[in-house]
Amino acid sequence: MNCEEFRASVLAGEENAVGVAHLESCASCRSQIGRLREMQSTLGDPMLWEEPSPELGDQIEALIGSATRSQDEKAPARHHRWWAVAAAVAAIVVAVGSLNVASGPAPDWEIALPATGLAPDAVATVSGWNEEAGTRMLLDVDGLEPAPQGYMYELWLSDGPVHISAGTFRSGGEVELWAGVHRADFPRLWVTLEPIDDDESPAAATVLDTGYEGA
Amino acid sequence: MRVSSRTVRRFSEGDRDAVREVYREYGRAVFTVALGALGDRGLAEEAVQQTFLQAWRAAGRFDPERDPGPWLYAIARRVAVDLYRRERRHQGVDNVEAEVAVLSPSFEGTWETWQVRSALDKLSDEEQAIMRATHYLGLTHEETAERLGLPVGTVKSRSYRAHKKMATFLGHLKERSA
Image (cartoon, rainbow over all chains, first blue to last red; front, side):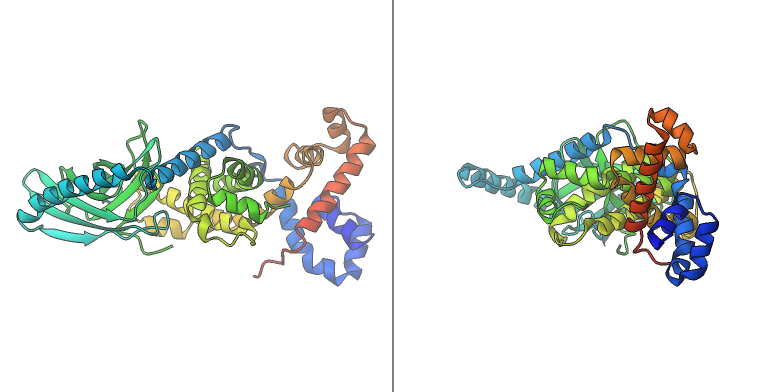
C-alpha cells in the first residue's frame, strides 16, 4: 500500500491491517492522519450534503443583474445633454430646499454614519431636530449607489433589539426622514439595503452604521 | 478547477454568464458554510445572496489572478456573523457581542467544511453519487450498487478513484495546531 492508497482508505473509512502497517512505517502519513480522520468525519456530516434551492442561482443572477442596470442608468450618456440641464435645475431645487432646512433652527445633534464594506465609498452624516412628536432628521449621503431594482434603503433607529424605521429612500443626496421616537432612547442609527417585501424587520445588508467599527 | 481570471473580471462587470459560472463553482460551498454556521436553510440562502452581492460589489478590487475561493469564504463568514447577530437581536438577546464570541464551535470548522465541499464539487457527477451514498446515506458498496443500478465492481473502482482524488485535493491541508 502506498501513501495515496492509504490516504484514500482513511477518507473512505476503510482502515485495515495493511493500512496500520503502512502508517507505522510512514512519517508523512502519520503527520496527516489526524487531519484525514477529521475530514472523514466531515464527509459524514449531513449538512455537507444539503443542497441550496435550485432557484437560488437565478435569484443571485437577477439581483446582480438589477444592480448592474442601476449602475448603468447612473452613468450619464454623452448624447443626453438635456440630462445635464435637468440635473442643474434639480440641483437648484435641492439647494433651495436645503436653504430652507439650513435657514431653520440649528440641529440638536449631528452624527457621522460610518460606511460598511457594502458601501465603501459612502460618506454620510445625519442631523437631527428633537421635536415633541419625535425626531426630524436630514440624512446627507454621498457615494452611495442607487438601490437596485426591487430594493430600497431604510434608516433605522435602534435600542438593542428594538428597531424603529425612520423611512426609506432609493439613492443618496439629502433625504429628510422622520421617526416617532427620540435618539436619546434609540442611540444607534443605521441604514440597510432592503428587499421590497412584506418583511418589516431589518435585512442583513447594512451599508451605514454608527456602530460599525470596520470589518 | 477554479474559475478563470477572465471570468472573475467579467463577474466584476456583472456579466450574467460569469455570475452563473462563479455561483456554479462556489455556490454550494458558500451555502454549506452558511448553513453550518446558521443552522437554517432560509438564513443560509439569504447569506449566499448577500455573499455574492458583496463579492460582486468588491470584485473590482480583487486580483483576478488569485483563487476567489478564500476571498468568497471570508465574505460568506462575515455575512453569516452579521446575520447571526441580526437574528439574536430579533430574539431579544441583550449581549450580542458575547453571543458572537461563543460562536466559535460552529464557525471554527467552517474553513475545513468549505475545503471538503469544494473538493467534492471537483468530482464527476458519478463519483459524487458514490460519495453521497457512502458518507451521507451510509450504504455499503453492495447497497450502493443496487441503488445506482451499477455492478459492484464499478462502485468499488469509482469509490476508490473518488477517495484518491479527495485525498489529493485536500492533501495541502496541514494538521490543525493544538
